[in-house]
Amino acid sequence: MRIRPTDLVDVLVYLVVLGVFIQLFPAVISETFLLALLTAVLLKAVLEIVQLAKRSAIARIKGSDRTAAKVVSVATLLVLLPGSKLVVLELVDLAFGDAVRLGGFLDVTILIVVLMLARAGVRRAFRGRAAATETRDA
Image (cartoon, rainbow, N blue to C red; front, side, top):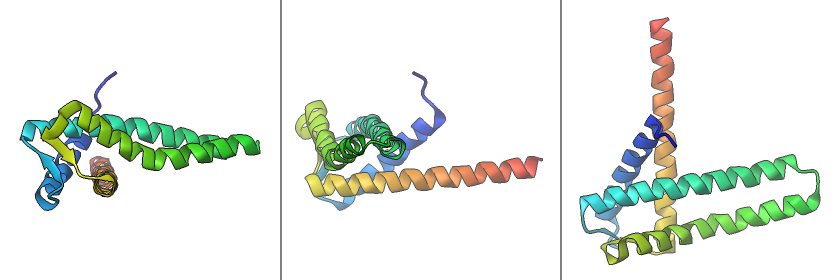
């Protein structure tokens, strides 16, 4: 598996957002910068897997003609949405113990939403910059 430039940018964006949350929310704790960086890498890996699962479920909803398959896919999405936050909390606890805490369910939900929005914003900014560069070079 290759690491793409966007993966590195995502981890850096996640690190910045995580740092902001550590500063603003007392329930979000990382004892060191290295642990915050490793947490950002863990979040990147988990959120990529969750995104793949969500896309797969949505594709099955759109692509299936059978009601049973659509119901199962919708149920999968309904479990995935809150379940992914619980998985993140557990994995961070298993990996880092008391040295890193992402708060409770609500804190991690807000964190993940902000992470995804920041990631989308940075990607959109780079995409716009790449298009402007291509136009200028042509």
